[in-house]
Image (cartoon, rainbow, N blue to C red; front, side, top):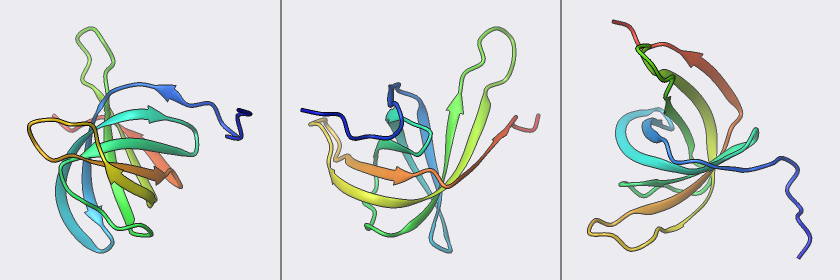
Length: 107
């Protein structure tokens, strides 16, 4: 099979929060499965609709004594599905990465 992706994907598991779906604030939790310069695949505790605009925050560890850096992202849900089996229902979500900003949480 020939790889057709335009950007390299990195298999990485990081905590993720969905903070806005369309114009509605929400608090969904999840974890990334892979990241690229153009998007993310994550699992979430709440289902989402294809085409829905979302704002999500990925907690990026810095190591040492520093506070984690948050990667705040805007994108659109590209596809959804059921995630791997677990004790709780989880949903797989692929989303674009249209805009982003690195922020340090306020103390």
